[in-house]
Structures are given as structure tokens and as C-alpha cells.
Length: 155
Image (tube, rainbow, N blue to C red; front, side, top):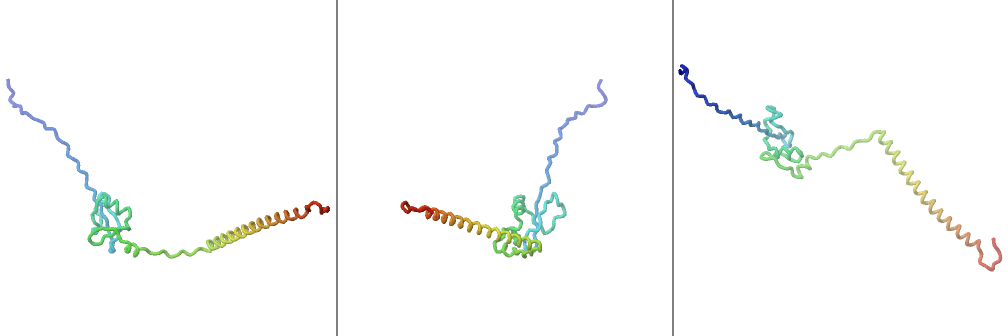
């Protein structure tokens, strides 16, 4: 006997897992009014805290600029390498640092030590020269003490 219920055929279709698309990492560089780089940002880290003035850059540009940020600037149209004149204008010669009294004293003592060492070397050279001269004189005395044969007298 047949059942009063009809059999429905159910076919199961395997579900495919959704394809994961990682978020796209975007890099940014921000600049001051003169065009100098003042910061780098990454959307994965900084989220909504990226300044509106920051410019989108590629990963390779980020690597290049972040390795030597002071060598690049934004000129209003593009990010470019600074020329030598721009680099020279930014260079500020540091003020000389005055020495403490202790450093002055150490310098004076060092100068005195060097001067004494030079004097000592000079005296040593003079002593060596005198020693050579004395040896020469002693040899002359010895030759004078030995009289030629036939004189008959020895001193």
C-alpha cells in the first residue's frame, strides 16, 4: 500500500565556501606646507585617523620614501626627490657647544702631557746623539794612547 504522503526528492547541492577577500592595505604620506614629509599612515593601523591632506601612495613608494623621508617632497603635483639647492636651504649649521670647566681642564692637562712627552723624546734624541759623540771621542782617545812603534813611550 502506498503511503498517503508523497515522497519529495530532495537534491542537496554542496555549498561552496565564500571566497575570502582580505582588506586592501593602503599607504599614505602627509606633508607640511613646504612639501616635506611629516608622516606615514596605513589604513589597517590608523583607520579613520588618517589626515585628509595625506596622499595615497603604493607599498613600493612607501618603502622608498620612508627609507629617506627628508630626501623627498610634494611639489603640489607629485612627490619628487629634492634637488641639492633645496637640501642646502634646509641644512642648519649647529651652534658650537661650549666646553664645561671640567672639559677645559682635561684639555689643558692633555696638552701638558703631550708637551712633556715631546720634550722627553727630544731629550732622548739629544742623549743618543751625545752618546754617539762620546763613543767617538773614546775611540779617538784610545787611538792616541796607542803610539806608533818606535816611539818607545806608552802613556
